[in-house]
Length: 152
Image 1 (cartoon, one colour):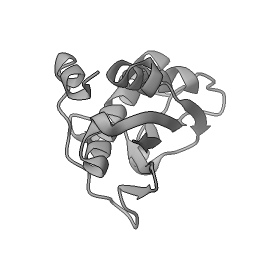
Image 2: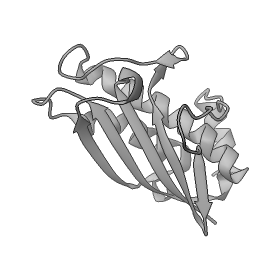
Image 3: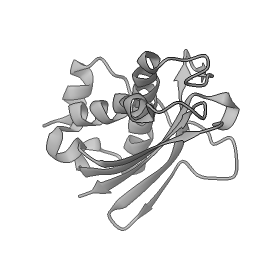
């Protein structure tokens, strides 16, 4: 499967790598693994602010996670030069800004997981995952996700 053809079919344009806002780099490649730093949800190019269980609903969550997944794809492309070289999306870690009684972080994170499976196919895009509820994410964003991928 050609990843770029799939992105075109889904009408997804890869964004440029975001400039880090603190003391870190967007990605680190070691051996055949690429570690992407956390990306926060953005809406219309600005931080997507909100807290699940307070002023955001679970139904809004997958769109925020999907938006992050698209940004992660842009960074992954910059890291490896060709997304067709990705042999596995290994793991996602999702931090969902949520109230202490909110329990649907996994449903929010599905927006990213489903996009990776759609773009790379089940064999490459299916991954291990953690989804945590946290009391805050940088800039008040509703979700932050990082990623580990394998390159062939």
